Length: 199
Image 1 (cartoon, rainbow, N blue to C red):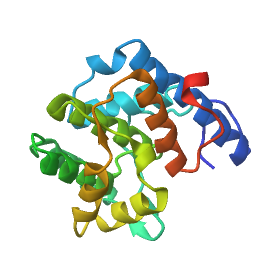
Image 2 (image 1 turned 45 degrees about the vertical axis):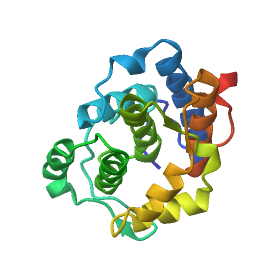
Image 3 (image 1 turned 60 degrees about the vertical axis):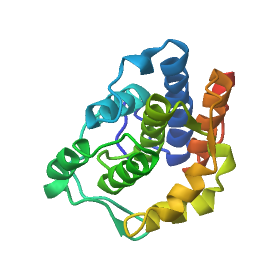
C-alpha cells in the first residue's frame, strides 16, 4: 500500500482514484496541448509526463525512486545504479523504429519511478514515435499477455516487442485514438474502471 496524498488506506479505493485522477490528467495533456511542451525521448520528458499524470495522488510523482523494485520475479535496475542507467539511456539515439523500441525497452528495465512506470513510458514512447515517424501505437491491437511477456523478454531480445509494436502502428493521431490507447495501456496494469473520453 503506497503512501498517497489522498490518505486512502484501502488498496481497491486507491486504485480506482489513481486511475480516475491520472486519466483526467492524461486527457488534459492532449486536450490542452501540454504534452507538446514536454521534451521528447529524454528522461526529463518522461519525468514531466509522470509528474503530470500522478501529481494528485503521489508525492513521488516525477521523482526517481529511492528503493529497489521488482515485478513478477523480475528485478528492475538497482537503485544504486539508476542515475547511471538513466544517463546511458538518455544518450541512446531514437531516430529509427528499432532505436526507439530499444530505448523504450531499456527505460522499462530502468523503471525509474516507484509506481506508474508502464503507463507513463507508453505515453513517452508514443511521443517519440509521433515525432520521428508520424505514428503512434494502437495499444488495443496488442494483446495484454503477449505484450507483458514481450516486455519481460525484452531485456534479452527486443525482437518480439518490435514485432508486436510494428504491427500495431497507426497514423490516426486523433484525440479519440489517443484516449482509447490510454485506456488499453491502463488495462495492461489492471486499471479498467473508467474510460478516458468520459472523464
